[in-house]
Structure formats: C-alpha cells, structure tokens
Image 1: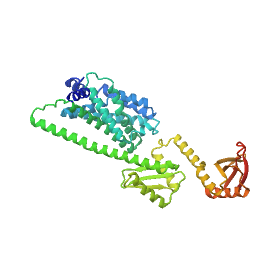
Image 2: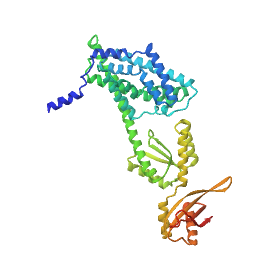
Image 3: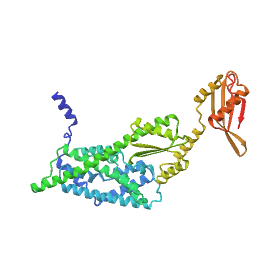
Image 4: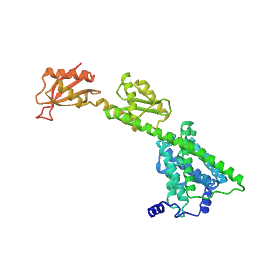
Length: 450
C-alpha cells in the first residue's frame, strides 16, 4: 500500500523539474515593473485589443493577450503574499495600478477617437462575469504559477495569458468611459478585478504548496507586523472572493432552473417566447415573459406562479407582459441599452418565427376533433395559402384539404367550414377534398365565407 501511495505521489509531485527558488523569485521581480519597453508594449497591446473588440475579431484579441505583460505584477503579488514579502507585494500592486490606469487611458482615447462605436458581441461578453470566469482565472493562475516555477517554462504561459483574458475587460471598461456608460465600465472592471484576485490567490496557493521560504525581517517585531498585515490582506481577498463565487454559482443554478421552466412549460408546447428577462438581485426575484401570440388569464398566471415551486424556483414572481404597447416598450428599452444584442439576423429570425406561428395549425388535434363530427374523414392537412386578388393585392386564406373514401356531402362541407371559422377565429375558410385515386388532383368541394 505504501509503495502505491509513493508511486502516486511521484506522479503529482511538483518538486520534480522545479527551478531554484531564488531564480524564480528573481524572475518574478524582473517582470513586475512597468517602465520603458514594458509600458510601450502594454500600450500597444491595449490598442490592438481595442481594435479587436471594435471589429469583433477574436483572433486580434487573442494576439493582444499574447503580447500583454499584465500577468507580471499579479503573479508578483501572489508571490509577495506567499513569502510574506511586503515590499514585493507593495511594488506589484503599485505596478498593477499603473498598468490598469494606462490601459484605461489608452483604450478610452481609442474608443473616443474611433468613428465605430457599435457595441459588438465581444464587448458585451466582458460586462457580466459568471462562475466560469472565476474558474478560468483560478485554474489559469495555477497553471501560470506552476509554469513559472519550472526549469523549462514551456508552452503554458502563452496559454494562460489567453485563458485568463485580462486585456479585453480592461479595454471594455475604457469603451464604457468613452461612451459615458457606467454600466459597461463597472461590469468590465468587476470582471477584471475578479480575474486579478483569483490569479493572485491561485499563485499564493502554489507558493505555499512548494514551501517557498518566507522573507526574514530585521527584527522579530517587524516580522510579526508584516505577517499580520499579509494575513489580513489574504483574508480580505479570500472572504469576498468566496462570497462572489457563491453568488455567481447561485445565479447560474437559478438561471438553469428558469430555463427548464420556460422550456417545459412553454417552448416544448409550441408557445414562442418573444421576451424573457430575469431580475435575480431583486427581492422577491422577478421573471418577466412576453409571448408572440399566446395570452393568459389571471388564473392561468397564478397557476404558472405556483408551478415555479415544482422547479425549485423560490422567492420569484412570474410577470407575463400581455399589453402589446408595454411589450414593445420593454423590447425597445433593451435594444436602446444594448442595440447590438439584437442584430438584424435576430430580428429576421423573430419575424420568421411570428410568420410560422401565424401559418401553423395543429393538424393532429384538428383531425381528432373533426373525426368526432365527421367520422368518414381519414386525414387532413391545413395551412394558409396566399391568392392574388388583383395585380397589386393578395389575400391569405386558411385552406383545409381532407382525405376520405367518399366525399363529404355539400351540407357537411358547409358545416365543416363554419365550424373551422369558429374554431380558428377566421373570417374565411376554404375546404377541398383530395381523392384517393388521384393524389395530385384536388377537387374543390365547397367554399364558405362570412
């Protein structure tokens, strides 16, 4: 058993291939400063990333992340916390602040001067952090710290720069400042801060795991003082980070349950949802829905609110927007805040969905009801057909084609047409028979109009 444990430990042992600790610390210290060439490289990387966000080019953004030196002071701060080196920590944070301010100034100037100020999807994705951003930052930071402590640095470091994505949220914050949108600015800075904090925390864990020696102070009193300050900073970093991670996990779980609810109760039943918005931070939470054609009574909305509990959605009020004016107003408000979120393609899709709903009939349900009234009918097909009334006008009329061994009598056709008008709330309905022996030939059997 002991042999197996030792073998397993040999596989996961990070001491193998580790660089001398003094050399690693010298390397970390040499990469935290933002002066001269490093500052120029950062400024150029910010411009490249801003252009990538501006034109919605993922490849350009990735290129900017590869040349960015932003990781240096964050890794330095993690090492400073791990070895209780207050001077290294202070210098790292100072340089990170300089880098952040330079990034904000350069990106704000770029977006202010740029004639193209449309909010692209690449910009939008950097305004609202989620639990995956925390996981990426934490595990990306782990990989970065492990790679720095190796004799052979290898390929992980460029990958870490791409994965942790420090540049795009910083540029997005500059975009928010240039447009005067504080929602963009604070959302992007929140994501940037989360990335920095979790990279720093993961670096701290690796430093502690590899047992880097703590820095000795001049006297015991100073040693204790630095230790208390560093411990306090670690607590300040850890506790809010745990809270933010918990909130984002809860929000993700809540959104998943909301998606299950809307899929099972509406989408899977053929009810098209036009508008959907959740307000997670309210008390009680709120779910707003708007539909293309479906309307609900007060009792039905109450039942739907009760159904929320079956999906473990608690402390939530379902609000169905049924007033067309209110629904249009809400959609327009969303578009005005975030006009690129609803692109021309999305508008076309919504228009097509609306047309499909207007032209779609539940042939299976209609057949079941018709067979009760007219047992001789074997099958039906119903859809809307557009006819030319004149050279410059058309008319769309619902047409039902039925299949039966014997054609329905004229009075039965008339009854069927009238029943369909009432059932479907239509002014005109045309009924035709499809004979069994002549599938391609359609015999008109009756037309009834209100």
